[in-house]
Length: 107
Image 1 (cartoon, rainbow, N blue to C red):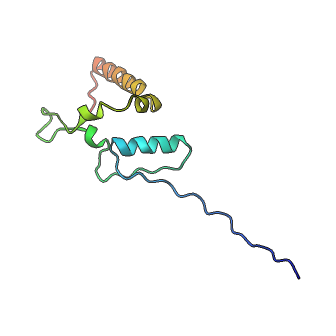
Image 2: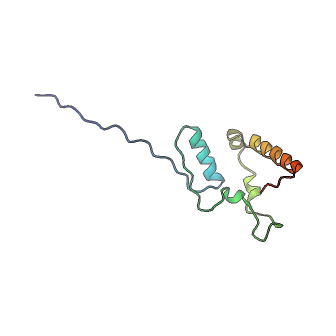
């Protein structure tokens, strides 16, 4: 009996993983997925990312309203460490201080 050759196709390229929502949970998930080498795409409905951590000015520039910034500040210490958030926060503060001394207004 003749042997049969098994014809196999190469596997399709991996599809990107898509966390839906640019809030703190979606961004954290995307960061972990991307760090592990997976192709990641974040989709957000609004024109600003951050979800509950966003500070907005719905009543004019003199009034700042935060949704749940305090709750988001209670992020897990392991998440803050893994994503180097403390280092990024310190760098952002230094950047803002330098801009203020230079008379540059940041939004």
